[in-house]
Image (cartoon, rainbow, N blue to C red):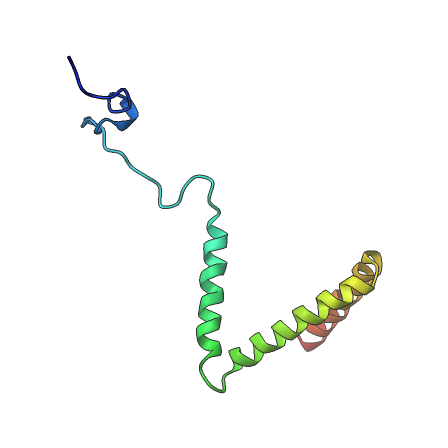
Length: 102
């Protein structure tokens, strides 16, 4: 009589058999978005640079953090349609400034 349990006989638990074809796995799983990895790495780079004293990136990240907090507070107070309109005016103003500088 055999003393092997039914779970041990399951094909999923058996050792993989060698086959003539090589198994090639992609660098990232099929459902994974590599842009997320890029921006995660970029944010870690900015965090590293933020710890270097007195540099431009430190000022930029500090201003960006403050702008994010202020923007979040404003977005709760002002209707979305008005925010879109003001953002459109901001884009026009920046575009005109860039054209003026050229």
